[in-house]
Length: 593
Image (cartoon, rainbow, N blue to C red; front, side, top):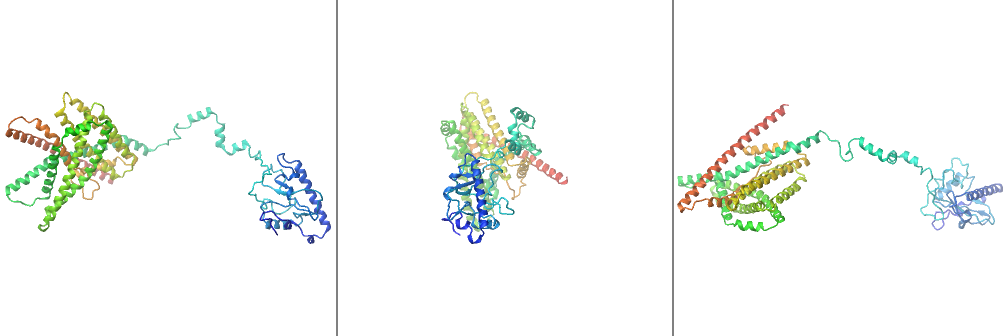
């Protein structure tokens, strides 16, 4: 068995039949006769073949078969048909055993007839009525090998064979539409029918929206009604807690310091101070240093420098100062806690280690003074910037509020928050609300000192605009933060309960979040602003009288601040007690149910 140069064509020796195996002359004539019949069939097929197919005499094709004249060989009185397909020699041998009566190769010479070699191609040449591919086998074959098992398509294209389109049956339009009902629906539908079906088939927005449920309805009403008033109530209570702490710094702390000094003077002996007294002296020192340095600051120079900037620069300056304000507020809270810890260690330390605790307290005190002074200058610059926008006549305040508040919405609403983060964010808003109030007090003091003509009405309108914008922006921000993070309105009630417990000093050390507010820097700014107002209203009397009026104004101010402190503090105590008891009763009824 030999292959021609590695090709897949079967050689003459494989397909030829040995003369010794067929000694009978009668069988030889019978095979010769059968071969002649097959030639006639091929010639008839060549006459009736599709006109696009090449003629047989030139090595054409018929019904998927190709005659190659160049492959024809005549010698030794024999004609050889070589089957050129991707067929192994073993498959041919098995086919020969199954067709022992019909060998593929036919001996006998056809003198002078240049017929050619039959090749079967993998070409669709019509329907199932075309000439079968079994011309190389007996038509009366029973249980033989199928032609599809002995054939594989060639990977090399043959240009002598013309490709034909698919049958008409495969391109039947009705059958295609019957197999794809959706396609029939979209093709056969008229524009009027389509529009009428769109009118009567459910919701007009059904392709882009879905039917809601009760939970979606509750979310809508939570966002619009239930959450805003809870959020605003929490921010307002936080604002009054900050205000109460601010008033405590201006009223309770001086009273404690005067009591400690009076005790020392009365007993005429120095006794180690308590933790509260050391902490109060430390806070008083911080506030004194801040007020002294702010008194040496020329506010008018800073005011004109900021006023000379454009609206866009004012917006940038205000946002930068606001960012540093939040950073300093957070850092100063940690610094003040460190200072109070050192004060406690200094008050309770043994005599042997008192020097170590003194140096530790001094270092913490110096750090607290520096941090508080920096925060005070930032708040003063922020107050001057807001005053510049209010006094300006080119709608700079409106541009500042719109740009700043919507930037705040953009930076907060579309983020993922946990419950603790939302809790801290509400407290930051309460502190920010108090800082804005201190800025407005600065603007009022500046108008009292420098404004000319009727200014109070425009001042009230601008202040109302600032507060309303701040309130609306906070409500929108927290409503959509709660919506996007699946936070229920009851969570803000829980935040308020925690704040009330903090007001009543019921919070344990393991509490997750507390409202942290350091009023030292705002107090320095307010004192710096109100001092020129008092100085401008002092009578021009000799020094003793001036000292008298200073003491009188200071005493009156202290009494008013103390009265306000008592009023706000007792109100917060009453509200916190009522709210905590109410939450306890609600939880008790819930557990009973």
